[in-house]
Image (cartoon, rainbow over all chains, first blue to last red; front, side):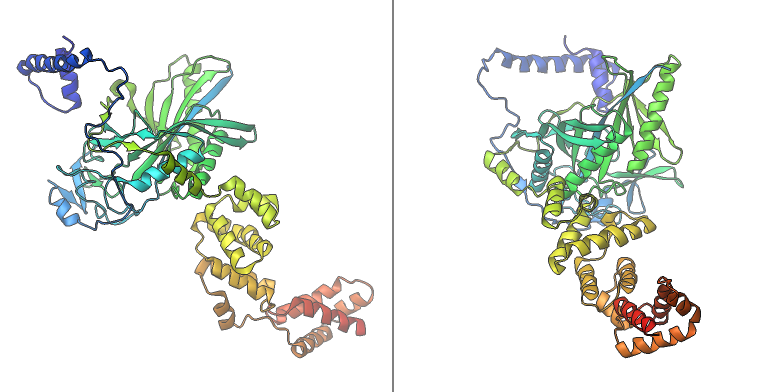
Length: 95
Length: 478
């Protein structure tokens, strides 16, 4: 097994997910199977194949440097559970 | 105490001078009411997609070329994952695997001599929002105006050994970027931010010591103080046989000390992966060539040209080209009035004096080439004398007055009325028997008193050449 329960706990913590004790084993097995599946690709001969960084055959999609948006704060802050002085108010974060 | 060496590398974040953000059409303007420069894309609403601003790529290429880097012609973005409220998507779009520029370097000069600081890479990324602590409700307020403003991060090799070298590097970097028009590099507004990686080792040691990273310096002076403070702190630790902990520290310039922010133990694992929402970038040779051809004249070339083309001293050229704004002002004013030496004098003497007096940076000068050129023409055409010109200049500098209008309105035009000058001088000579006697007994300097009195009487507006001539003529005739 390449994915251990410790790996699951670590990744879950990074992703801020709660995975219960019972789920941990199952998640580890599932993730391991996913890796196995991807592993099949190692059987292919990729000599001379250029590495791909995107699945679609597109490149250089740009926009021109033009300001198109205007103040939309009222709409934006409708999504805020809490707001104050035109800002999103979130639990105190200290660096 | 053993002999120690300080080893410093810099990560410099520069906000690019684009009009719109990196992935959406929101303005990048500094300030503005909180959250008024924000849209669904830069606030990370589900279902939105980023589209790359072409100008960002061109600015990054321009910076890379000017810093002697090689350009990664096949490049792409990566996703850096972390949870922090300044980043609404919970990830920052950045570049890890294929940064747009690599392996550059610039030459710096300090009292210790010349050296090259190598540049490891430059990558493109988006800036994060701003967090303000609310002391009343004990919560944090988030403003996303800055979120999505394009940045380049310029990462140097650990090639610097002193605060002097760091400042020289930053100053050179700032000038290059300003000349390119890639960024305004205002530290106060956060458009140039330097993180300092610093470690200490015994002189001659083959390995680097453990380094710390220091953030939050908002002026070159603060950077110099922070380096000195951190150098001392690390040496003290080593001298007492303790270890330097690899950590990020926050500089507090008011307290003149730094505080640990986060240590290596809880160092983040950013789980970078290729950004799926953005297709790759392919920079063709032609595109690269277009950007190369467009590169403007940089400081060193400009300095040489000023000395040659305008025949101004090397020192003046150095000071004027030391600020892009000053250099622009100089060239545009010269184009208007055709008097490079005069323009250079006004910038070097009066402008510098007022900048110092007002504790201002040259970038903050608000008068226009048209105003300075008009003033120079007034002096040149004998409309006002130099004393008055200085007074008018101060008004131009501080209050942006129109020089011609101001002279007219305040009756500052030069008096070269022969009759009026003669009658005034006659009166003064009559009232100054001592000076006249002195002059007559060979103390030529005594003439200065009469001239001074005349200028005073004329409220400084008399043509000094004429006054001198008339005074001498009248004294000699006595």
